[in-house]
Structures are given as C-alpha cells and as structure tokens.
Length: 169
Image (cartoon, rainbow, N blue to C red):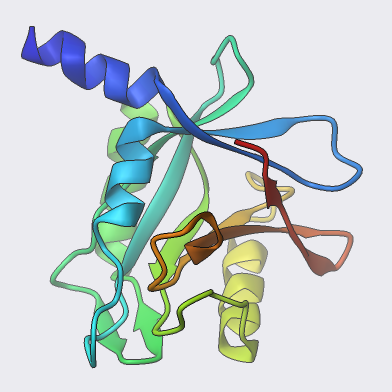
C-alpha cells in the first residue's frame, strides 16, 4: 500500500506550467511539488537545491517526476549555491536506471517572489553548456519564500535567453 501511495505521488499532477509559444505543458508531480514546497529558504538560511528529472515515457506529457533533495555536500551561502558534482553524477546515474532523464535543476532564493538573477543566469548558462547534447531546453525552478503560486517559478533556456513559464493550474 505504501508503495502504491508513493507511486501516485510521482504521477499525480500538482501543477502545470506552460511557456508562451510552446505547445507542451510541463506537468509537475505531487512528489516534486512536495520537495519544492518543503525547502523554502527561511530567515538567514543558505540556499539549497537539487536536480530535476522527467519521465520521457509519460503518457500525459512532459512529467516532472523527481526533484532531488538538498545534499550536505553542496556548498552554499545566503544568495548562492554550488551543487556537489559527485552527488549530481550519482543522481543522474540512479535516475537513468529508473528511466528518468535530467532536465534541469531547482534552488531556493531569499526573495518572497523569486526572479532569475545575474548569478542564476551565469550558473544556468554553465549548466546548459555542460549538458548541450542532452538538454536542448534546460529548466530552472526557483523557490521563493511565498507559499502563494507565484512563490515558485520556472524558466527554460530557449533561443539564447530565459523564458518564464506561467502556471496554468
């Protein structure tokens, strides 16, 4: 029963995001929504984050199935984050065994409503450059302090710039 419940959390849709001019929606599973919602940056805490994976065989569209949790090997400050390279390699390997594919990463911000910063743009560009073959349109999710829908936002790198998606549900 617990396994069935866990499986539903990985396939039950919590949110939907759509980019202007893109036919596909990004569906967000309840398990991913839980990870993002449970790791908001509080007070003077440091940023945290993890990687994002989709099930490419999802029947209902691009389903964001897995958001890895923060890791104690990551380095962070109040306004910056470096994910540990070895943990990232291991997470990609483990996810690939499950049939999941890396699509981007998520992290927190000390803002109420997050905005992509110049530091994020540089980090996202390096991530994109490193994964050009596998990720033609990588995704970045930033988790702000607000528990309202605008407290978590998503961007994709397309045509040389960052495009913000709009939540549709």
